[in-house]
Length: 420
Image 1 (tube, rainbow, N blue to C red):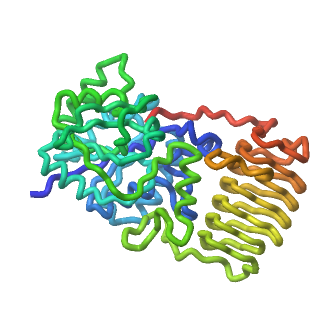
Image 2 (image 1 turned 90 degrees about the horizontal axis):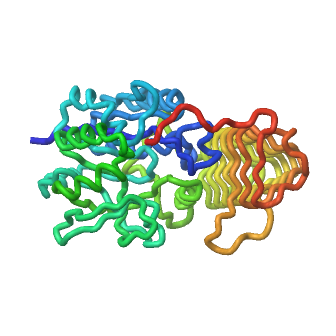
């Protein structure tokens, strides 16, 4: 008999390391690959894996997140159950607290096993295979893992295994990791054990109330916890750098990650084939261009979301342009992320200057609704906060590494939100 399954998607974190891209939005709602959102990948994995009981635990910018999830559920009616669960009061204190505050949902759904999933990862995974492994090993809990370069392992929880793939040690984000086996932040728990441990954790005032720091290190010492190794593409969208990298890995003759139709990514609207408006007169090379874009210049090795407009003799290269970005004539946009509704005047040069040495982060990032007047030059590795407008550009030249603030109405990056 097939076990009853409930998937809880943690979609409430503030995404502090995403900087200006998450000042005005929850990280799981970040546009990705033109027409998608980051959370679409986890939601789609659930649907294609036959999981009909899904709940999203939301917190930071919860109103916007809830609106998006409602649109997504309306479009994807095959998701027979999608519960949207904000905190009952205040904010969630951590990932484990988020689950604890929703134990009534677990009781109502009455699952045999519970998947704990992150809403900010890009990957395609059949969760049924992980569940089969969990059952085969007679596990109390199973942790999804991937192998990462050892120099990047500090970003993740890491595990040590015995010869039977049992986890004998779990350390969250060690500054000196001893292994490159990284937790994906994907867990399967037998229901009774999950309820027991999050309830016990809730009584500890000193706890971080987090699965990685508080729950997993304790249960691996006492319970049968196994590691399921995932061999496909997986990217944790934890930083602006990883977000940029994951988008760029969609490009090229042999991309590291592809959006093929064998495992379609479901989003809030029906996605058409990537194409341009009929009035394009420009050139497009090795790029993903969404519907509704108007290209009159040149786009190279870039990703354009719906509604982007590129002026005449303008060149966009190695960049990500989110919905409704408008760039004037005679501009250069080089290694940039331009958030929604950014407007660039004529004869602007964004991301100019010598390339930094290989491996250095030199991408210039704009927040939402920035308006750049004509004739402005901005260097590499700059930050432009949301809603910056023409009056905020005192000088025509902005040096590399600078930050530009909206002087009239500074962004208060402290909306309601918790730690999941």
